Image (cartoon, rainbow, N blue to C red; front, side, top):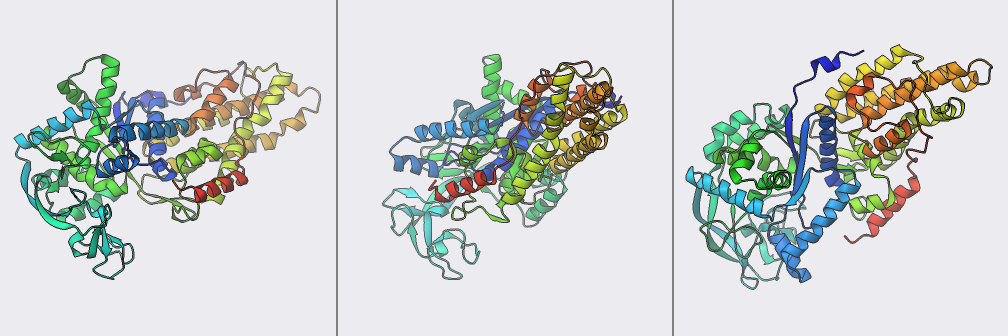
Length: 559
């Protein structure tokens, strides 16, 4: 048998996070690219025996949440509580299993944000100076660029946002807009000065230049980031003026932490909340020490790379907290080769998908196309139907469905005492080394290709021996039992490899196989003389009509 277990890496303590979804809207399938790939990685690491925890939370602060709550006549706390429950239900139904799911509007996060801020102040990394901003007199608040619209100063296109033009792509300051108006009241904004708090990022240029080249990001991302150092790093505005939904900056009267300061701190806060559930009272010093004992792995989209590759590690370094081991970056989701679109019905909410299709279809399809790079992933709906039906139903599940009947009818549900082809079985076992490496390096597409290549071998094995024909000839019954037993054992290895991707199929397969769980290392030992249960369909084929109905429902949705 394989000597794989003899060279296993040491037991690792790993802490994994996904970016925090904003508590201002529903989860859609574009978001799921990140949470599904993170869940797959966590499940694989756990399958290899590592202590791997997965944390997330709702990103609950900011002006958009304050304003939406106001428009609904409820408090921001009520809004984030409602959206948080919706998010958690969607994630759970897609089989995404967090160790803890929290909110950034928590006591843990407030204490951590204040601690990190005070440490940055003590180490001379915070400065204050006035800035000029647009102010809505009627609303009584300063306006972020998204709340100002007007004519583009470059191409003159009307009704453009205060920071960039959707027509010509130009970027500019809100003050350059032609006839700017507040989105909130329609009034013309005034320009007023306000003192703001800044994180002095330039203090960390040397540290960041080294950190970003030290295998924390991957070569493709690291090369991109080096461009940002050429012009020098600029101060980062970490404050916002009242009214604002968030944490007040210690020592100030009307200043709040910018949402992007306390959002990533929410990773640690979610961990702290989990620690308290496990251990009881845990102090701030204890959670900081515990955070430092684990490998920290973040999964994020390329749109928030600047925050996670520069601000976040610098902030942690400046406050004396452990910096991340890895920041894993992915691209965006396209549907049928284009950006998701409500008019085309391809802006699909997670719940709309769940109303029409099995979540494991999407888990597999994303996995079959994901790599460790930052290229965008395309969900081609025709290919989605064909690939899931061909790979999962036609190849993997087919092996069990065509083998179980004979074992149950002719052998009392008991597998043979020996394999028909031990060499083929060993080939399947040995392939686990490469497949495991692919999962750990986030090359999920390669892992899926290698699993399906094995599934092809298993189906070829059955096709060449044609046990259904041998069974018609007297005296071949035991050989047929042995062949079908071999096939079921090959199926068991395949599902073990697909376990991180397809947790529900794995659970149902365990019930069929009569085992408590499928353990990665135990694949080396086939099930011999073992009783299986009656086969029940493990997965239905994707119905193209259900896909059309999902697209239609998404087109009609106003959400």
